[in-house]
Image (cartoon, rainbow, N blue to C red; front, side, top):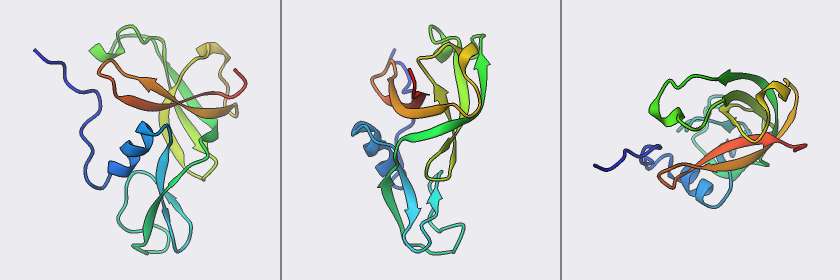
Amino acid sequence: MTQPKWIPEPSEASKPFFEGIKEGKLKLQVCSNCKTWHYPVVRVCSHCGSNDIEWHDTKGRGVVYSHSRLQRVMHPRHEDRLPLVVAQIDIDEGLRLFTNLVGSDPKLIKSGDPVELDFEELPDGDLLPVFRLSNQ
């Protein structure tokens, strides 16, 4: 029996996001008219109403807004990954992303800590964009 994929197949609209991950980049949408960044995928800018939306690389930097520690297996995919730090990251482009923080002792993470983009390889070979503390 084949294992299910960890990440669903990209839609036509989200394909640039997933292609960016394969290139080691976090690509998000930005309105060409008012320069507002968007995530998740949009067809129309929520700020100015323009439909001139393009994909651009982010800087891959931000700060921890909030975080929590998952310590119990709540899903089979959590096996061998605990404790798992789930975080809200304010990226430099002005968005708040829900993601995982990796590579740090969960007890040492604080709101306001600087973070940078990284990628975690999942058991099925897909990559997941995550963040890690910049000073580690």
